[in-house]
Length: 330
Ligand code: DAH
Image 1: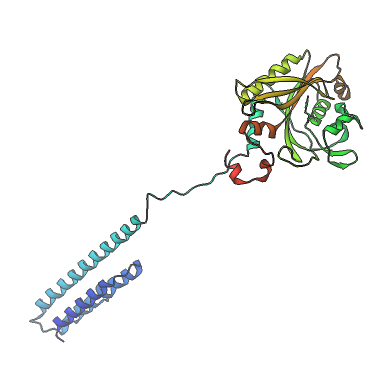
Image 2 (image 1 turned 45 degrees about the horizontal axis):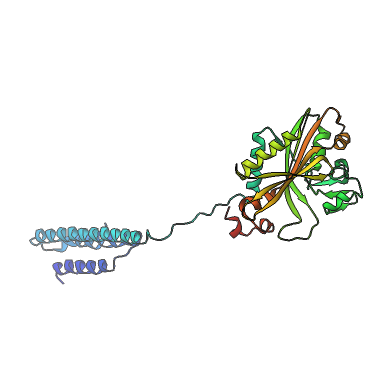
C-alpha cells in the first residue's frame, strides 16, 4: 500500500465512523481523538513521514495537512448538526396544546371558612374571642346555667357522659360560666368551638358539631342592643336584604329568650339559625355578679347550620366525610 493509499484509507475509515456518529459527549470526544488526537491516526501518518522518499515529502505533507483539515471540518460539521438535531428533538417534545401541570393546593374547610367569617364580623364590632374546655363538669355545662339535675331542659341536649359529673360539652354556653368566674364585668366575647350530642346521625344532625357563643355583660344592656347586633351580623353574613325574625322562645339561662329565624327564599320558609336572650339573673348569681347592677345578653349559633344555609348544603354529614369532591367546591 502506498502512503497515499494509507492516507485515503484513514479518510474512508473516518467517513464510515461519522456515519454512525455517537451522541454521548464522551464517545464523540473519543472518536475525535482516535483520528485527530495527538496519538490519533492522522498524527501517526505524520509520524511516518520519515519513511517517505524526500522528493515526495512536500506533496505528501500537503496531502496530509489537507486530510487533517478535511477531517476536522467534517467532524465539526457533524457535531454541530448533531447538536442542532438534538435541540430540535427537544423542541418537538414541547407540545403547547397539552394541558399544563396542575398544582393542587388545598383550601380551607367550609366550616373553617364560615367560622372565620363569623369571627371577623364580631371582632369588627368589639367582641374578643375566647375558648373553653370541651370536656367539662356537669356544673359548668348545666347547673350554673340554671339547668339543675333532672330538669326537663336537659332532654333538649342528649349528653355524652364521661363520668357521672363529667360530660362532653353539649354547647359552648359552658364557657360563659368560665369567663364570668375568671373576670369581672364588663365583658364582650364570642366563643367558637366544638360541641357533642348523643343524637341519631342523619342528614340534619351529627354527634359532633360547632357553635359560636356570644356573651356581653355591662350596665344597662338592652334587648334592643341584642336585636340590632344580631341583625347586623346576619345582614353581613347572608346579605343586606335577608329577612330576619325574632321569635319568643325558652332557654334556662336567658330571660327573656328568643330564637332567630331567617327567611329562606328557595324553600319558602323561615329557618331557625340561633338562640339568644338576656342573661338570666340566676346565671349571674352562680358566678357572683350582682344582677341588680349587671345585665347582659347571650346568644348561641350552630356553625354547620350557617354554612349549610350559606352554601346550600343539604346534608350535615358532608362536613365530616372529607370527600375531596365536596371540599374542592369551596
Ligand atoms: N346553648 C344553646 C343550644 O345549644 C344555644 C343558646 C341559646 C345559647 C340561647 C345562648 C343563648 O347563649 O342565649 O341550643
